[in-house]
Length: 231
Image 1: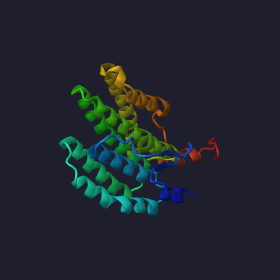
Image 2 (image 1 turned 90 degrees about the horizontal axis):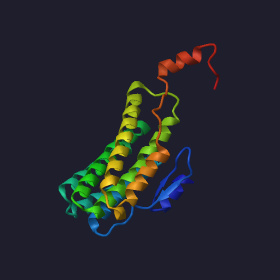
Image 3 (image 1 turned 60 degrees about the horizontal axis):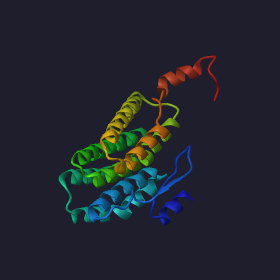
Image 4 (image 1 turned 120 degrees about the vertical axis):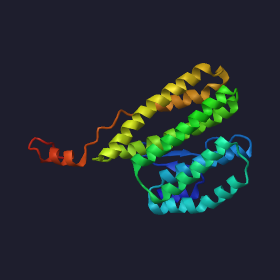
């Protein structure tokens, strides 16, 4: 059912293990080809991470990768935007051959950080239209890229040391991003604050405390104790 819906709908359909499906189109449709190119790349990455199976990811990748590559080659972007676009293309290719909720959340966090840096630069330059578009894309990655995979990770019974460290870094990054958004809100004119407030609202609604998933060996030791609760 999920695969059929995703196949017939051109929008990203994200099925969270604890929430109702999140159905969205591209992250807004700002005027101009340049904005749409980045929106399509962001949405493509979210479709890939939302896919429930390896075959579904392969189908989504095969259906759009070449078109996105050609479209990007035919669009002149500013250097910082071109670098981000290439990173989104590489991340899409990575998602096809890897399936790891913690690592995916970590990679989307890195992309979100790049978008937030670009948004701050746009605000400093007085380009609030571009800032709003970048913050909108940031919110898409936060809600349907980072949070979704954090929920998947929370469903795991055990995490190894490296994955636990990544989750701790994600918690620190989340707090840092909230501080940056709050600072941005202070310097942005009232008419351009809506997207920043929305991003802060997503952080507040979906913020997670650092996960305390058990290390596999410790989980086994706990299960072996006589007083351990049976699942």
